[in-house]
Length: 445
Image (tube, rainbow, N blue to C red; front, side, top):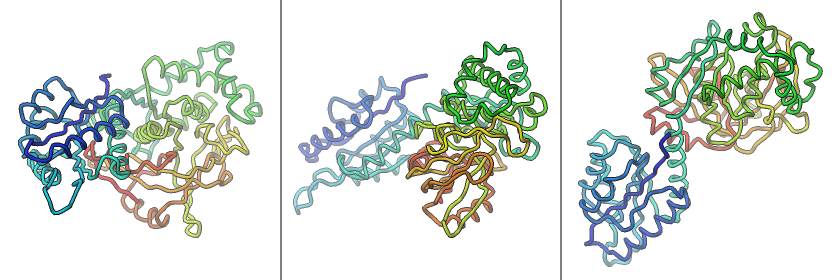
């Protein structure tokens, strides 16, 4: 994949206070390079259309930070838009001195001119305001840069659909054209039967490393019947090798009833292990659930919990998320570890059976698909509480920042899907920026 290239475009005219403009230019370059050493910055201020053209000519930017060092007319932004169709951040500098004397920069008026052209071109953009050292300005730039990198990385993502969604779970289905056009990712498909057949062809000896790896990561795996432990290792090897051969970054796997009826062992713990291996793995063949998990893993650098909202407690202001038993082992409470049990309905193991650890910041996220084929983001922030396992399977309890009951009432009425990703860390701002780059509406609670 082409390397992500962010570009700084500082424009102005020489009739304003050049000492102030030069100082702002140097400070801005320093801040941008600190955010990403790969930021392309010019050697000097771009004070004419000719200088701007010469700077832009060899570039292929994936993000442009356009800044009015001083006022510059709309022709500067028009030139940028003529060259490129990439995300744009418009940055206004704070006027450095207000002393009754000369207007040093007049960056704000320049921003109005640039934004007017952006709207005339019908181009979405982000706007931020402030001096280079201001915390809020740097937070905005950091979120916008991270989201742009994520958008870029999605163009190299392969998402796998392993089998079909069960009846009544059609919300998880995806079309390859929609995945490509909306997110830039490639959707590939394989029947669950193919991986089951592949798993059946392995010997116990070939699967021994996968058996040992699961035993080390879990607690009580040895209590699972030997046949199910060996079959788990076969499935784990089959999934892992197929993922490696095909460059898969995220997957959504069919689980019930096939793995119980046709194989005799659930895929739950395989998905758990894959999530700790860095592969976003969702169950019930929920493709956009898997994409939500992958996005969360890129932002947090750690596995993401995937589950249903199953319980609401107005007194605690909490929502409990639960699923049958595919959560990553690393999410388990430290006092219990990643306990292995059985699937709550089929009573066959191995399936994970634990409560998740607490963490200070949490983001509830979902890439939602509307009936007309358009997409939207669900966003909510809160705190993951220290709670024991709530039900057989894996669970996590989130105290939301806003009233939990209102969130549940509104999101049910808005028709959101019943699967959500719980991400470590507060990243709603970055996800809002990503939605902006993708042209998607956001429902932030």
